[in-house]
Amino acid sequence: MDLKLMILQTCTGKMLSEYQLNLLRKNNIGSLIDFYDADETKLHELWAINIQSVRELKKELSLLPKCCANAGTPDLKYETGIENLDKLLDSVEQPFGPGRVWELCGQPGVGKTQLLYTLALNFTWKHNQPVLFIDTKREFSCKRIQDMLRDKGTDAKAWERTMKRIQVVQAATVADINGLLKSFDQHLTETRASMQTKLVLIDSLAACFAYHRGRRMLDARNSALTDLACRIRKLAFRGVAFVIGNVSFFGNDKDVCGDDGEKDGDDEEITRQQLEPMLGAYWSSVATLRLSVELPETEDFTLQDDGLRYMYVISNTYGPDGEHCLLRITDAGVV
Image (cartoon, rainbow, N blue to C red):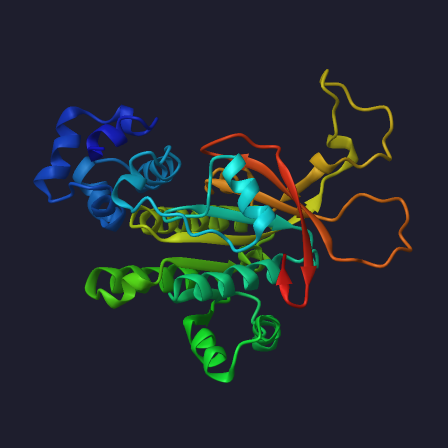
């Protein structure tokens, strides 16, 4: 879709005049990628609007339905290598493929990292392509990957090839992630070899915001998230798939309401709908698919964890939500 038409679909863009929009083409800004790359100060001076409006427009563009974004990407289906999960994704019309932006949510310790390891290993194993694994917690475990490989019965050479394809980079802050993705984008432009990397995994985005507390830090957090969303959307437009880890916590009981809008009578009841991912309402709309990994509900807390997990679809840009499947966390990965 033409850049001008995309801008006119946003609230901020509708306030721009035809003359202002035509200035983009005159200044060699003719595509969505050109617009994301354009300096905010340049756009501010070009349109005579404040920089905050420029940032808001970039944010709104990143939230538009990406029907046009997939036009430039191959109609491929990667598959996760996890049978039940692939069936679930097919049923909600969002199979794993180029340009997808997924968010993987769940409580601490539920198994999100093991699932990300499994996705990384299965992708490199099946497609013989590298994966970029961004480790914000500085806890990446080669041993856990090797345990999965051992279960496949591979030899030492196969281990070495696979481990080399999982490119692990540490990033302690969102600024680090943005800088890393900017460099990655430049490599996509400059070298064909980098085009082999079609999957980026982030474990975990929430860890970058552990110290963002209070009102003063809220603006800094939202600005960083806007920049990150724009950069992710730009790379997704070019066919890169993302799976981003996030942390969920149970909300307060006082916020629980029934279908009639009134508070439920049983204040002690905790429902699955109360499990809320971090990073706020804006970030919740960035991913094309939001998945939640959850423990099966049980009243017997003495039972030993058998690895069973439910995977719920809690939001979906391209199809239905609310569906779920059953997975199992094992030392050999998620099955």
